[in-house]
Amino acid sequence: MSVPAVTIGRFSATLHDDGSARPGEAGLTAPLRCVVDGGLALALREVRLPEGRWCVRRLRLSLPLDLDRPGPDGGRVWSVAVAAAIERAVREGGGEVVHYRHDVDLLADLVAGAAAGRTVRHWAWQQAGALRPGDPAPGVEPRAAVLAALGRAPQHVAAALLRATPVCGLPALDRLFGEQGWQAVAGLAAVASWCGPAPAGPGHDGPVPAPARALARTLLAGSVLAGLARSARLRPGPATLAAWAVLAAAEADPGSLHRRPHPDLPRALAQELGAVLGQATPPGRDRPAAPPVPTTPSVPAPSVPAPAVPAPVAAVPEPMPDSSPTVEATRPHPPAPDEEPPATPSPSDPAPDPATPHRPPQPSVAAPDTPGGACTAWAGLLFLLAAAPDAGLPQRALDHPALTARPLRWVLHRLGRELLPEAAPDDAALLALAGLGPARAAVLLAAPPPTEPERTAVRALSAAWASATCARLGDRELEDATAVRAVARRSGEVCAEPGWIEVRLSVADTDLTVRRAGLDLDPGWVPWLGAVVRYVYV
Image (cartoon, rainbow, N blue to C red; front, top):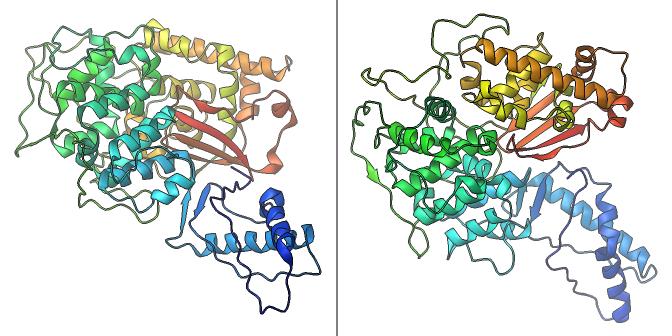
């Protein structure tokens, strides 16, 4: 998106003159043809627009027709004038201009608008390509329209919902989707083995192994969607609850969807989420205390347009406001890599004794990461993503028996700390390596330190990753650890938000060795991070 892309729905011209000159049809169509056949695209290359998708609803211009400069010459003059008008409209803003920084922004705005019954940006959704000709109208069939848009970009489903929910509210989304809609959305976000014909739910009361239960609790504790569900006090049915559990996993730890095998995790997530919402008790655990106020039942989505709700939709899609309360918690300083574990049990420990009352972890209602970037001295750390497949990552981490009770985000963060022990645990590059920004990192940073088997596994994986990176560089004279530090040590800014991670570096820091090794090529969509990763040189 570094070069503006222009899509013109309709381009027309009307000739106004006093009758003294008659240019003929060719005199008018020739400059128009020049504009649409590439002249405007060339003119826009000289215009400095912020990156992203710019949707301009309408432009009206009065341009002179110079009969002494017919054809291409006149077309170039018109192209420059139209480009200048686009730049002016973008700079001035207003209701006729909408800016989406990326596709996640676009989908989130569509979901929030359709759920709230606000379709004033229907034209922008169509212009940006989220809705296409033949799609249901969001004002008539909002659920079908949203599912059509999400179905074309299933990789962005979890991030779009995460950004849309604080804007329109989970109850509005529940009315929009209903049970069948939630199941369809979960099917888009998850791998096939997570969404069978009989979804897991609190009605499936078979015992779940302790590691799967512990991992489910950890994922839900870091899930913004789970926190919003608890705060909304909805009471979903088993199928909806199972769908929410899948979406919470896709949001909190996308790598969990790729664990092999994982027959117990979906059921554990549904059971634990039911316990968090106060409507189910996993086997072997006491039922938590009932909520202090009456609850509101979940209402299936009707076939008629969803009713509007009072929750406001932002007038401009960036930044997405946080309309929900934020629970702030004191963040303990994470232990050093070689620190001994404290006496508190780790997630891989056996489940507590059934006779001991245990309240499930309560997800905090926190805002998703915002577009602001964070400075780091280790911006090149994410270049290691290019060498991850050579090191067998992430599958080796997902399959390692010592790491089954840990989210993949935790493993990636620990790998980064092992590779760069001098970096601060909350460094923006370390967090982005785990697919997170500072706003959603509290649970990760407060996690119990690794056990000895986990520490051993992390060291082996980090050594393999460093070796694969060094092999890419082709310099066997450097030690692996030295090579990793040389690649990672470069100043930059990291912008990590749901579904989108950008690393901004200075053009002066371009490294030909790194470029020849292909380490700074845009990774694009990284499924196990649940985000698009881009490197931007400025």
